[in-house]
Picture 1 (cartoon, each protein chain N blue to C red):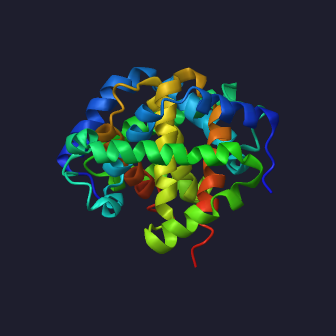
Picture 2: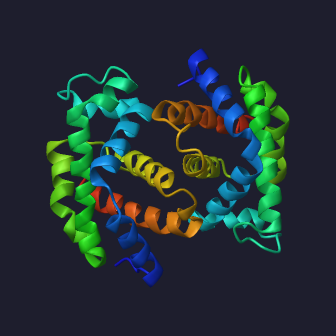
Picture 3: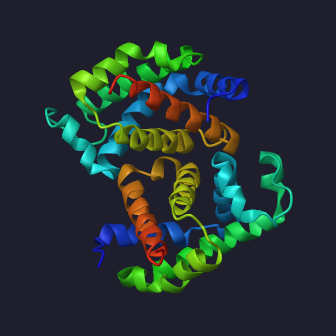
Length: 143
Length: 147
């Protein structure tokens, strides 16, 4: 299920249209992750406020979307492009990779709610493939 | 038995009260067939599913999408016993239709996305949590008879 040239073109195209609201998308997605999948809260027990829209949630959402922007620019070789981030997630943060699927779903839900016209079934398919490939690249250094 | 808060009951009821079955049902099933193409295996006799445009234009897909969405009405009317309510449908899906139960989750994810697109900002994290809880209970009930 690797990304073909059409998928990459669709991802770049959608990203160009939504990236100006990337901070809002990130904040919303992380807030949803913590609300819909409360087990994800364990990774953020050091935050003062875990509610949707809070300072730490917004800051982290911004960080996540910056990572996604990076991934879009490295879409031709996600494994190499995300090596540093993979090491960080594997050795420092030790995030169970199952959580990437949950956050990916939340990101797609947010894009659907904020950009319903852009989020056609074809765009959804390409983005889902991309986020899945991203999660795989992020898991590269785990073992 | 699943415990539902007043907020959850009201939220789910509210979503279905405003539901346009003939729009949302087809949209969710079409999206599932496009985003997860292996699900097309169950619709061999539906005619042209060759590409996204064909799927979106296919009247059999549209009709079936509406049917599936109305199937959720049963859960809505029996929220305190969804497990028993879907016993018969679970047997149908496992014994007759031979649907891999993982697919129920894929369709419910697509339905969530379609509802999110429809409701926009009203689809808050709490509303999403309630809706996904409802769908996951139905998915679990549908998967019960498989062995």
